[in-house]
Image 1 (tube, rainbow, N blue to C red):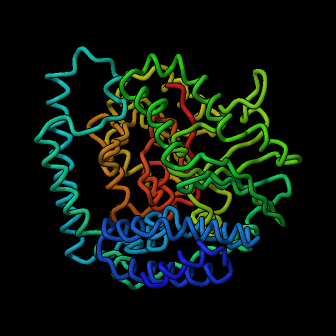
Image 2: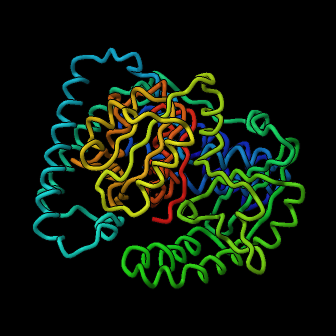
Length: 465
């Protein structure tokens, strides 16, 4: 608090170098106290309470001409829960878990089976008139009080498991990423990173190349204005008025492209062919490939586009050992037999990669939770084409929907899901990238959590289903 107050005073006076020094001390204090916390929730609270320190530090660095330090500050402020998970992803990887952890995992899985059974009863009695696609759409809350109670009990067990994590136990501290190490990951001069960051006042777009960093500022487009616009025009219509969302999404994306000044950004991307996009806050929900850049042309027409939660997570992924060239492939196809085109999609993938039938889980008879778990432990590449559902209010309850139950995001984050031989996951499933971020910009979705399983590359394939 002392360093923050000093930094604020120096910031007001425009003494940028001294303000940066004070804010650096404040950030070190925040991040040190964060390592003392024994729960994910408390870690998030500590970071959220200090987000203005990061904002002012970024602005002071920009005003002082230190774009590299501003970029590093942006990186260390975001996705820290995912960074923690990745730093500790070798825990119990060999399969040797303490008895108390095994017991907690059994409790967790038992509660999940109870939730699945209750959900099936609820769907059978109340949702016969609803289409499968509607029942799979993102939910604001649990289906009923029984499920909500079971979810709360399960979350309590999950927190106990997480407290045994070496990061939360204070055994591992994660060092912030440096700009030179991130630039070293850019292996082609035709690749650039677009890192978005919204302060209380403006939205910043850092453009990082192999040997260069630039900045575009969208003034008076602070996080409150931008988040409110995306919430009202994008997320709420998607959840509540899906037909209206479909009809108006083109106009909404056109307006967002104007707000982000994409036309001006294009002038900074001369010679670039691939974009690594790091969204911020509600921008995680936006399909950047569909942003218009001209008459009947979109960002995805001009660039190869990849999404990452943070550059530090990309660095973790790139530094993982590769599994070699001999990879075993598997598919999970149309688990509930109500998804048009999924079986055809699986068949084409199987032909392309010569996937034998034992490594294809097809329909209700095969695509069960047990079979999925057995398959994912045997293959290095998995293509999944089936329903998924995001939970807006409780991200840990977002699910991959299978024939006889669900695999939750929370399960994927437990020590029971350590898959060191898994190389690539292709999710051709709706909503696996949909989530609402808090002020700390920790986006928890099925797609982002698969980075932490560990899986060297977790790819989200956009789906029209």
